[in-house]
Amino acid sequence: MRWVLVLALLSLSSVACKRAAPLHRPTSADARLAVQEAIKGQLMSPGVARFSNEQEMNIDELEPGRFRIRGFVDYQGSYDIPVRNNYTCWIRYTNRGQWELEEIKWE
Image (cartoon, rainbow, N blue to C red; front, side, top):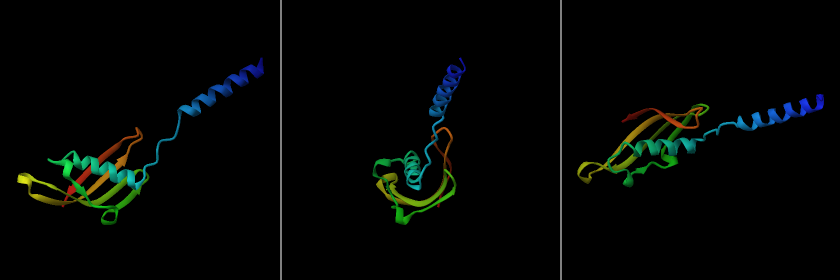
């Protein structure tokens, strides 16, 4: 009888461990893509936006899953006038597995 109880407890703990899978640890590349998507959502014509490449950007991981990203975006403004805006973004990866944009500063 005891061995049946032990086996039942072991199988239950195995199922519980599978459900509690660790969250994805985001990389600076993940953060860069998330910031670009957030910025595209604020542009009038996001389809023609060109972002600074990784060498032109400054990406700092402030703490695990939280980043500060500095870069620029070129896009078509009003009347199709080309515009370049520099930005600094703070973004973090939540425990729900989603990106949360904390702040964007346009410079």
